[in-house]
Amino acid sequence: MNCIQRAYRRYILHRHSIPHSEWAAVIEPMAVFSGLSAVEKAHLRELASVFLYHKTIDGAGISITPPMALTIAALACLPVLKLGIGLLTGWRYILIYPDAFYVKRAQTDAYGVVHPQARILSGEAWQNGPVILSWADIHYDVSNPHSGQNVVIHEIAHKLDMLNGRANGMPPLHTCMIITEWTAAFSQAYQALQTSLNHHHHTAINPYAASDPAECFAVCSEYFFCAPAILHQYFPELYRQLQLYYRQDPLLRQN
Ligand SMILES: [Zn+2]
Image (cartoon, rainbow, N blue to C red; front, side, top):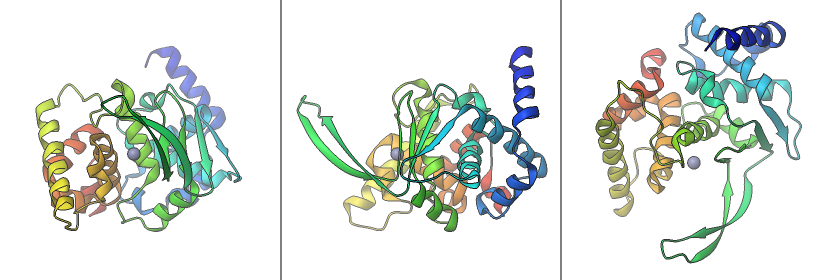
């Protein structure tokens, strides 16, 4: 960040910081933030303030109250707490539906045949476009903090993945990270999930992770922050890769 950007950031924080009492009322009851140090919480509040300044959160058939916006901002900024808010630039809009939403899209297969597809979604992230979320799902995730589900973190993981092109399960890795180690850890988990599904066995984590490498990264990111013990128990190497990527250790702080 250069000095002009730093001055602009200071201006935003001076004029538009989230009031401390409103911030504490939202994040203190949420288990996903427990274990963060006072310094980390203060930094997260700064990131969330900048996030809310730059993003437009609109409701479609639902009014977005300040605590709702704060909840979304705090969850969206948790993955970039040690990476910087700069990774969440290049898009502006967040659209909130009251509940899961219906989409109808045409999918083209490897042979060029177009298949119309209808799906019910709890969230969606567009390349260079908006993030779309279901408030009912956000509310469920906050109320069931150890389920390993968090639609906001899921869609933000997709946004991070899209920083180097179409989401494929590999965001731009830090220079200290080894691509083959990342690939091996994710491939091993992906194969294990596929094998469980093929044998109609219970999967260690949400089986949606086995639908696509991009979904594997997004679902594992949810577990990393919300149910780190489960992810670490079943896929310790994958946990270590996410620890290196996000530069956080939720398992350590939640113990
Ligand atoms: Zn997804």
